[in-house]
Length: 227
Image (cartoon, rainbow, N blue to C red):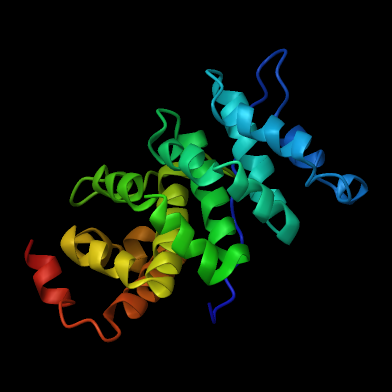
């Protein structure tokens, strides 16, 4: 896809009594298990977690998949398991932790999978929940100021979503057409104010807008601001 994008999907969350923490899930993906992590049984287990009624299980499943996709053989297996259609609805999960993790997993998949996988993601209609995700942020929203050493997960999720959108628009004209039709420029442009939204978000938005604006006669910043 021509650009190297860092993977970023960590979040802070206390461990509930009797349940494995997300950190424990990440630890399970260390080098010692790398040779077997892409096995069908492992992937099937993660896919089952994605559909669990338990929030921590869904979050753990997203985390596991985000780590798996660096292995090409795992991507093939995940696509065979229809993981995109299973992950995509989690972009709108009631839990912000799950939304954040799901977007991180999809972002990683779009980076490591390359052009073909991005096209497959668009074909599997990941854009419908992604557009709905962005439109959940009201006009004029501003990031919260979390406690020290914590992050505002709403902002972190927005960053992940922006990177995912950028990757998809860079890969397929269909994604650009959806971007234009849904007026997403109006959602993204305000976030260029780095003093309000922070540099990471402003940079991600700038990169996304740069990609979408190339050879796009329907793209104008002014029209987006006027909507």
